[in-house]
Length: 158
Image 1 (cartoon, helix red, strand yellow):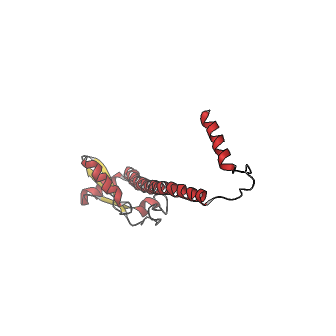
Image 2 (cartoon, one colour; image 1 turned 180 degrees about the vertical axis):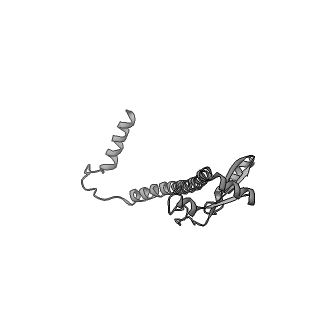
Image 3 (cartoon, one colour; image 1 turned 90 degrees about the vertical axis):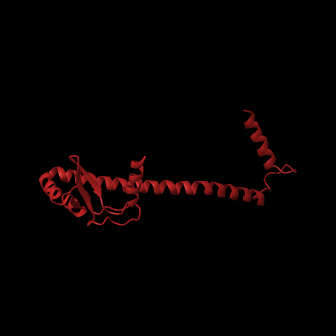
């Protein structure tokens, strides 16, 4: 409650000049304007970089989820076409399925947009299916979200 009274007294002293007339003060002083501009500058200095980094991180996460959905779609394709995929793996060591093929099968939507640069994912890029220890491994070979692979490799090292 004491801070409330202090605030009221402070407003009284700021508002009234020595004559006791508050109505003649119609503008802001240079000091008041400078303080407001300084405070706004300090706020912008801290808020803009944080907001920018949050936006970039969200775009990276979105790109990461698109790549994961492409790999999941390849998993579904493998489930539907196991014989075809197994024959390709046994002859080449891998089986590549393009984004276009996943789109024509109805496993991913058309015109996947890369949130990092706004471009549409190249439909000729492929998800490579390999087999290790009787398990399928799905790897997107496009460089649209190249940083994802680097982060994945670094996390596997730890």
